[in-house]
Length: 152
Image 1 (cartoon, rainbow, N blue to C red):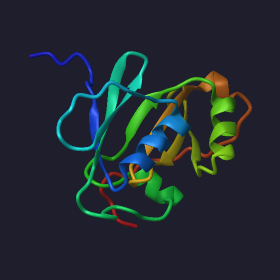
Image 2 (spheres, one colour; image 1 turned 180 degrees about the vertical axis):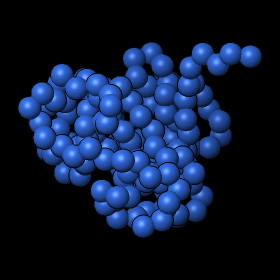
Image 3 (tube, rainbow, N blue to C red; image 1 turned 90 degrees about the horizontal axis):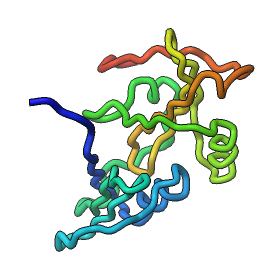
């Protein structure tokens, strides 16, 4: 067996509409065709590919928590550490996030030609946006080390 690519991931959201709007408004996903599964679910697309499926949790407020600190972002959250997307348009992205009141942490990836922006969705999922280092020329951001499974 050879795996060719990630098909999609599912978020069980405390608030399906808030989560859907967050990915649409902040990261540019589009709500697209969704099969009828008999339960509330939205499929979010990048181009013609459904990448994120958002379903409504039947447990209210199960994972809400305040915005992560810098150390929490480098640790990630829950069983999945983070979800990463390749992106372009760093300056426009940061202006857009600021205009939407989204807190984020910037990082120059150690030993890689990548500049990273970390943020959290409404469910506490850490989202990593990877930009080419050339887009970040002249920016000064700390180099952060990921700590996997360690406590403070």
